[in-house]
Image (tube, rainbow, N blue to C red; front, side):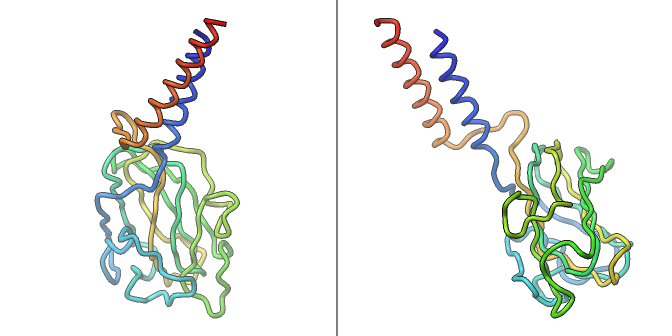
Length: 202
């Protein structure tokens, strides 16, 4: 019976891992004064490196009184973040379960990322260790979240812009896996059962 249990545990682990994916947010809103739609933060388009900070594909603003809240649409175990921000500014990303009480997830500085002061522009960064755009200060332990908040913080030239924010994770609670995931789970369970039966006959 121990072989069947081992196979079931393996299948369960594969099932849990397979649910980690890019999250499609429900919406994005902004407070304060800014140019262009806050929905550009979640439209699925990441501006190329060095894109002008006031390009039509970015949300831009000045100062530190503007912030943006992204609703992920449900509660997730948040595992990674990728984003595009103006290269010579500092930004904070906070998370929340209720959209009211936020906790800082990470803060990046003006020297993070690859884009240099000249020509400057938008800089793509992420928390995926080993990726060419990995930024150590974006790395974090997985947290439960439904909402994200992004804002510029002192440290840069206060001419700020965000082109995209992409979150990765897996749903909490009653998540419904893709049919292909169920198929993989079933195949692993059947393989474990077959192995267990052969072992008992031996």
